[in-house]
Image 1 (cartoon, rainbow over the protein chains, first blue to last red):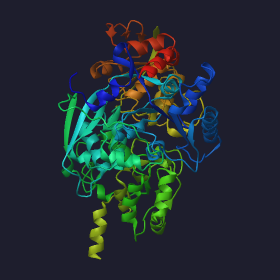
Image 2 (cartoon, rainbow over the protein chains, first blue to last red; image 1 turned 120 degrees about the horizontal axis):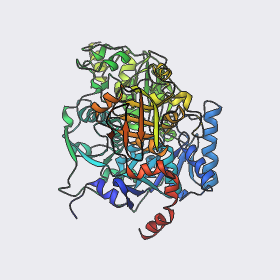
Image 3 (cartoon, rainbow over the protein chains, first blue to last red; image 1 turned 90 degrees about the vertical axis):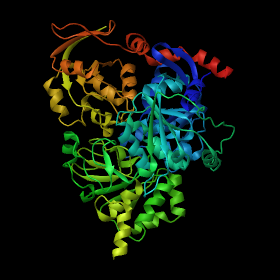
Image 4 (cartoon, chains in turn purple, red; image 1 turned 30 degrees about the horizontal axis):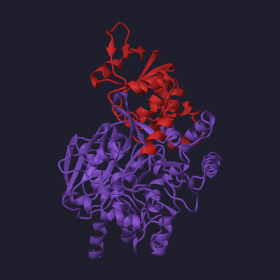
Length: 444
Length: 174
């Protein structure tokens, strides 16, 4: 057998049957089910297939998007998943014990290297950080995985994203993720899995790898993927389920890839998006490019050459499946400590476990002393559903993953950045890197 | 299977699923009631739809349906009357969702799409993988043969249901 990529190994180990058109029946070790996209598939199985699931032990469910429910409709979604999970004996995380699916699933130890995971949620690629093939799908496909244990997938190509050097200059995994998208393009990953390699990737913590893989979908990629190593083992050993018995696969030396790109981590600096997709980003102390798309400029009310640091913000949001884990909150708290926010600021932990850990460390006091709102866990305003939705024209600096038109509310304008940049911007009321605050303190 | 009817052209790239149906409308238990929210997040969306009230074929830009996995985007388009979407490229999840809901995703080069965007009406032969605009020559395209069968035949879930025994056998031998 020729040397294989890590993805090829995961794929080959899960193909049940090759199908026409380059498709395959691919076995799913785990199906993650949340309240927004699960009910249609679950109800279809109930109506058409006698409510029979392939294996309820291979499903984990939770309330995450609107937690707790904001109205009767979302309460019915939650109640539907709740009663369905109980009826089938499915592991279920209800409000109080819940979190965003891409945060809680790894944090509890449900994923192990070598697994395949799917969920009716595009950011399921997050779990690729654990050396798993994890991908977002529609509700019907999720229903199929719950009914038959498999997805029908066309075999994706594999793009190796090799990241040399080390992150420095205050740059984080978020800035690396944005740099990858800007490098290969907003749709540059379409039809591909991004297999991350290199010393910069090896040096990332699991939480940083999750942030990186989380945004693979923002380049159109099927998923992101990082080989498991000692860092992975150490993380899993600290989870409540402490999974064991998994084998860490790596790409074979000399494995062939369909595409390769190399990025120098040392050149990356804190980034912020200016446009209407995550690939439209620049350094925090940079400028709106002169070749910016007219539609993006019009929606964001910007002009070419404008300094990003002069952009006044109306709201700041630290949260989402991208950047709301404990290390993200610590990074933000470092910036907030002893300072006051200038604009409405919402800090939403990625899970209730993250919330409790943050409170044990006193981070909640730092946020609230700074004047920020400290909430329970939810997807919140990231997708414009609840807890901080924007009004038309409002500009929000956000640690989330999508700056699409209307994403956080009709007419709202989103600037994506790492948690520390969001915190610094909240304090100055405009886009700012944390280093600016340090300089101000010295000058004062 | 023939799809004939009015064409609506929205010549923009990267129309994401939040623009096709914003998250505030994702609060139903099943796949109904989405049609009225079609393109509710797209700037000028309501006027575009009103300009072609009987449109059955959407011609649009590359990377259509990017972003969120919400199948609601496919449901909204189907319930608004669309039977086919023609674009230079689709996001993976949207394309899968389209096939699973009988919405035919047709990929053609940008220059061909540019010409089709000026069409008033179109005839699409799904079975033969061809389409025609007025007196023009026949244009051919390629569909995923398996997923095309989902559209013309029994659909995605029945196909998977037919595989359960084989999947259990594979699992037992794993």
